Length: 120
Image 1: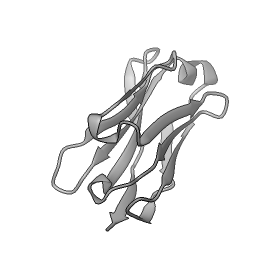
Image 2: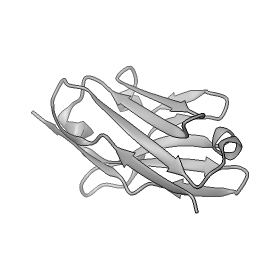
Image 3: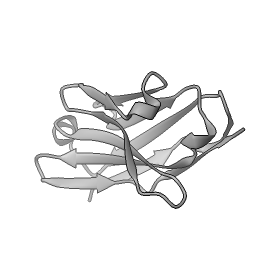
């Protein structure tokens, strides 16, 4: 059973940085490596939205509001996905979710989310 566990959330002041981590278990390395990975954010009262995406070949894509501030990366050997968030703004406050899209299993896997609160 594939499980994703996010960590690294918390309260940070505006202008600060935070690094989120997503640890995958129950998935073999080759399947993890061949999967696309992404981070989503869900602010209070809003829909869950894509923040950053990294394809299996390493190509990245970012939502416009976080371009040049956030960086998505992955460590396939450790089965981890990261989101480095810099120059944080109060509007970045949300629950952040990790998602892995397995082409092998044709399934999306989600973590339980981690809260990031940016204080002004």
